[in-house]
Image (cartoon, rainbow, N blue to C red; front, side, top):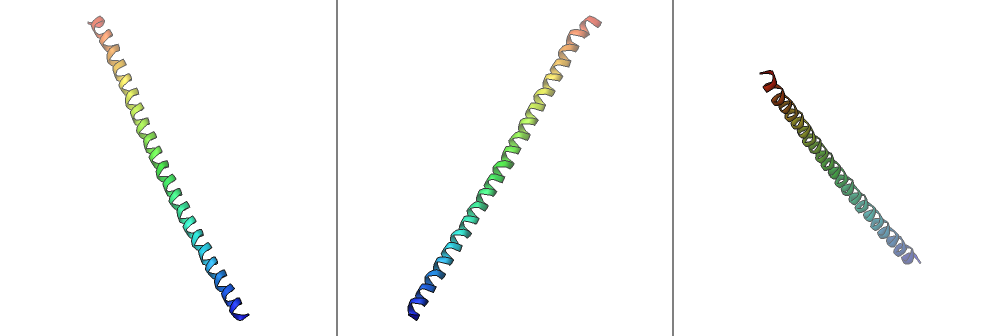
Length: 79
């Protein structure tokens, strides 16, 4: 009887450790996934910032070309 109880106790203990181990691995996987999402988020923000910079450069370029074009049309008339 005592052997059965000890055997059962060991099984419960082993199962407990295994469950805790799976849970730790699960937490680790979730942690890796969160870090992955965070990295992807940073990357998306980086792409967005680059996009804003490119759009800014395009807008500035259009403004400069517009001003130069405007001046190119105005200067000959003034002269």
